Image 1 (cartoon, helix red, strand yellow):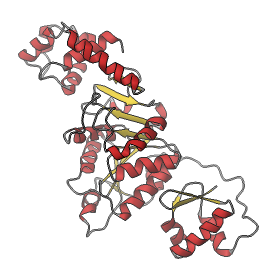
Image 2 (cartoon, helix red, strand yellow; image 1 turned 60 degrees about the vertical axis):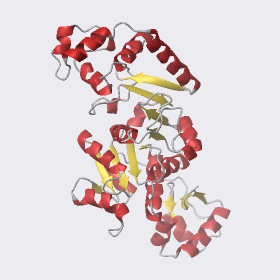
Image 3 (cartoon, rainbow, N blue to C red; image 1 turned 90 degrees about the vertical axis):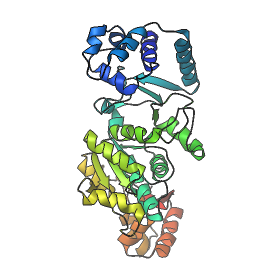
Image 4 (spheres, rainbow, N blue to C red; image 1 turned 45 degrees about the horizontal axis):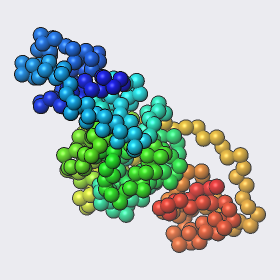
Length: 369
């Protein structure tokens, strides 16, 4: 977008009583920031929600002062240092899945390049304090879905969000983070390395200007972007009043699919997911393939050209070899599929690793080389 048009948007947003919601309302009646900026007083009054006082303020904002110019120039300079960019609702490269949601962000700040391939995406969200079960499920779903070309979207928060992002990266997939602070503020701070990995391999989005702190009020609003960017939302462990439930509510309003992994009925941490399933608002899923099939994202994987066992392979190693594929599988599932206890399964997996047949990825996941 032209610098002068950006100035117009910043000038409008500087008006007391006008936020992104009002700008979006105006955008439904005018084709560009320039049209909004040059709108006549009578045409503004015809819009439901624009009062006489607000219309007068919009008219008066046409005189762009030096403070607004300096603020925009500083922001663009900061973004350049971060290798970031600014995209407005009117730009061609604005993420198309967000265009039709309720109150889409007027301005998106980002690091990394968003492409059409990123439309095939799944949000994975949940509690900040997952159980061992929740951790394993998040690792399994993200690490098996990401290699299928499906982007994993989440909010970079502690817990399930972090596990989903990290598992996607470890599986050599692509992940998208939506934060509740400025691009120059990594929250939580211990995710700095993960933040840099996502910036290098995926995309980081925020609607908040540089310097914005991660205030609690920012996160519920951020959740509409997480669901808006995604074809569906998977919830793994959340309380009934957890932040992930806000994401599910946005997904319902946006017409996105909702999936939930059932949890322990005696654990409050699973009350939210179980309630969504009980109300029929979420599809119950137990395997990643169920989501891929439901969203019609399952790709035809070409058969392995060679799956010939090494010469010295015992009966147990053969069982494990037959159970594995190219996508990582958690040790619990391997042991169950092979009818072995975990300790014996790990011993034979280690032997297969030494033979160069199997690789281990973080979280006790294994796949064929």
